[in-house]
Image (cartoon, rainbow, N blue to C red):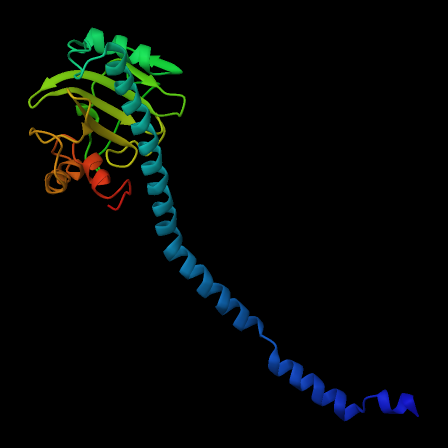
Length: 235
């Protein structure tokens, strides 16, 4: 008696199979869904990857900035002075001595960019930036960033042009992405540069930003834009 109650009739089995078929996905539907997912991923993934890479570059730049800032603070503290020229940074030879004393480094490059920097660099717009990057003494920091500390006494009171590639000679080797020009001023301030006094205003940094992207310019401007945007690469 119990077995009869628990059994299914042929009609019930048939109806059940029809209902299951109605609730399942066909192969065509699965393939269409996968195609849609693939298309959306192909559209969005490059943007997501690009945003992540920008965040990595900006974070690495901030870390290097802190290390650079501490080196100049220690120099002035050790010499008990208020300016970098009073601390003795009045020639390239003295700047080189400072760099080797106050920065830890794993590699030193003298007459060539390699292996501290790449052989070629570009602007964001694709133009070549190689000619504005001099072959001079450079260093690879333990973080993997490379720096070139060049004595350049420009008015108003800029003492050093510091060129940095936050991931050394690795790609993309592009000004405004992994490579930047930074101005070191006589009072120890670190900023961008537009030929005027520091600290630079937000408007002056924004006005200089175009020179970073433009292949016909000098490469200054991107560092100031990142300062304005609170260490975010929003361009």
